[in-house]
Image (spheres, rainbow, N blue to C red):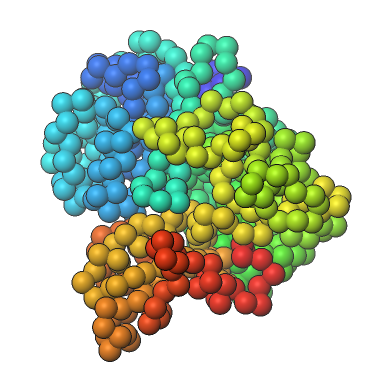
Length: 511
């Protein structure tokens, strides 16, 4: 079944319940997404065109996705914490012909240069101005009937890269009978125990890939999605109890924050309705997962995958307790290889590759598309690990030095590019270091032009330099100083030599 059929059969059933209590029924979701689809069509958008949206977690987020999806459009969520330059880049790079933005980021909306003649429609949720029309007012001008040219669209998510700016993970639009990524997620949700009468909880921002895919799939399934405006550990427990949540998805940082609640608060809430707690985005520390299983029971299910969809693994609590630290049994399509593309035996660490014929590409970047494929035609996202004698995969490192902080991917090159141009910086390396709550945090090691400048004053100046130009989560949380960074004669930075100092005493370089 699909959202439209559920809306016809049970129009009053809640499709979305916000943490604040606001509801969007299936009937309203269908009507409002239809109206928006007409607006998009009226503005000249056709199959294959794009919509960019910068919205916090709110019902309109899902309305926009369904309007674009049912119109055969690509829809690109934009992180609400990005800066002007970052948002401007994504809007342009995605080829968006419509933008939907929230009034809560009015200052950013005003600063964006949206005069591109290809940008046909500018809508603002919760307000108007600066060239944006009010979302509600415009919806009222459009009919609630089905989209003029119904088709299947797709999400166009921006995945963090190892150098330069992020790139969009682009899939061909599915035809009428082609499988869609949401279809596979629906099957996953059913396997996790979510049925039409179930309740799914997403405590994470919808502008991330997994929360959006699972929430959209929930509405395809006909279940109800409880969407938190923002994560709060006690509030999360309250919502599980209040709505009798059956399936929820988390990142390890959320587990950490819930475990840090006082014991009497944790005992206060009944979470027995939960059949399954899914977690992904970053490997979970062993002791954290042990405590969660002790608290919630063996209902934790972990998967390892990437936005690119090259491959993945799954593991339930019982398997994990027998293989602590593993992310699941390696499928036959998974290979561990060395730098010369030679496959490695069990127990030896190498780069993780997957076979497969997926047509995924990085939009506007054929070089990056080619770079993730090896001589065998297998593809990787840069993670490293090993497979044990029983065939279970363990992640050990990130070959690309990608930083995963609280389940969010951060590519260090952006901060490095900013800092290296600072007048007082001669050289810089940015990488992830251990953080008990977030898994990793961003660290900068700087070689100053004048060693006498090294100290708290320059550290504060460099941190502010980053924060004024990058989203806060991408910025270093601290700066250390070195008289000389290790580089070879060709200029290659031996970043691992620096990074390893901070990971001494840790079994892996992934938390």
